[in-house]
Length: 197
Ligand code: TMP
Image (cartoon, rainbow, N blue to C red; front, side):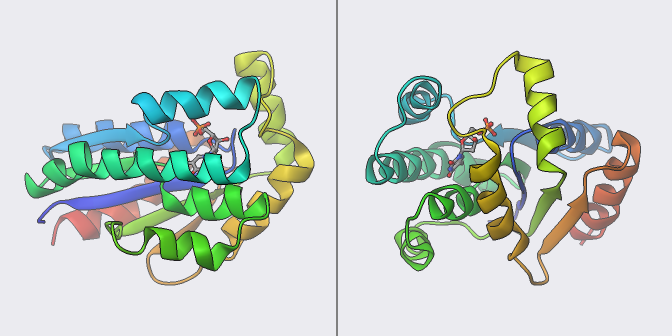
């Protein structure tokens, strides 16, 4: 695979989707072939998951199973072909979200990792957005009018703690309280060296 995989993670309302889309658009203007994509996807399993967030949350096993099925399909049908074509894939949420969200719900984190080990494509960079949870929730209410079953403070605090534990060369923790332009330029400063190799 000669493409690059760049992942955006963080709690709901942290601004990661805005930045992921901005990055993908910017890469196109710079002459790179880029795709913006997201999980849960809009395919069958992703849709089931989204429905469950607004009405009736699934059991933790059902929820994780569906995320994994959705992710496998996403990798097979979209991401692998794009990466083989040399594209820069900008991915809004990946298996780190399963570790953080299903881990925060009580699923064993090592088990979540092992369930992904045999099919995952490792990303080149992972941006993790940090922003005050109260502000994230306010943003969601302002944009959508209401929060869903996952978007409550005590749960998101646990999710955020797990996100903060990802450390290492490819993990970049982003201060999402900065302006949109500042964050975008910060992100570009990490992405440019990666794609000009
Ligand atoms: P979104 O708000 O980015 O569209 O994501 C939908 C929700 O799905 C969000 O609250 C996080 C949650 N989620 C998980 O719980 N586990 C996962 O593996 C993924 C990808 C998302």
